[in-house]
Image (cartoon, rainbow, N blue to C red):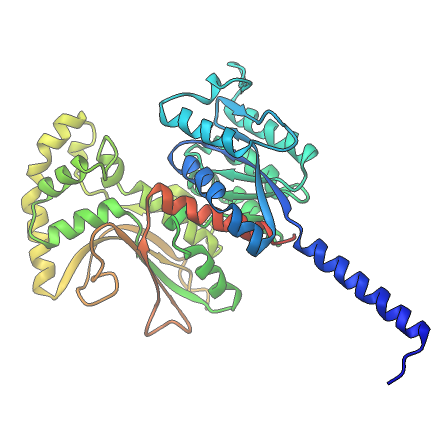
Length: 412
């Protein structure tokens, strides 16, 4: 059909605009971030970011730029402050940390004054970048609660966002802080904390989908400790409690003091984060925790504690046998029970040793994997189950990086 010169000119102009829009869409967008914590997880995250440059550009049109890498004592930025740390500078920083070096000893590092509190220092850095680079993502891969003010500022400052693998700001801090970080209307677009619970397992994402569908959760049950999962598998295989704990320590699965794992506090933190995600206004002190050792062993030195462990062998062997006689196995698990929909009961959060059917998802768990079961109105007879590696620097870093990509492509 013939087209008038005027219509032809309008169509050409429209096509040019569409072409320009497409080209603009294909341009790589720089996403600035500030990393707090340059240890195992932080270093793994930096390596993952550099390794994913091509993927991020081709698939998402983004390039992450590290404005600064910080810890509670210092912050390091690149030679080109506006452009962030180069990949070469990132590699040098990772090597420096791997050799035992401190961020404070890096050339050009901004060192925290001795009289300044770490939380004030970190918050001041976030405040600085909120002005210089308003789209900054604050990434917490530390293990300190000193990051709480920095995360709160990122969560409540226009255009800033936060991603965290650190459990303490979400568990040790008050429910009031958690509500401001994670339960505000703007939180889904501005805060991610997936790796604070299951490393790379998408536990928070799965739970958030259930909650957003108004599918009432009745129970969350799970094994959140690779170390304690290993211990439970050893008991099931017939090993004594003292022997399997000793082996776990030799393999590096436990903390230097195994009581840090056997006490169950780390599991309690993760379970509390899930409970709070459901809206349960609980504090860490509200969690009922059953340690895997008796009070008499709590105050011993580490060598004396390990030497005394055989005194617990008979009791654990009896529990294993009693569970087996009922077709069950022992697991160290957390159970989160929200208040009933009709308002009866206040809900509960318990962490400790339980006997579960050997054929259940939790019962079939072996080794150091983590597992979470979510029961709800629609997942009543058959729970929603997530299972896989729940620890490790690389796995945790992958979870954080996924959170960062989601935040980079979300506006809120």
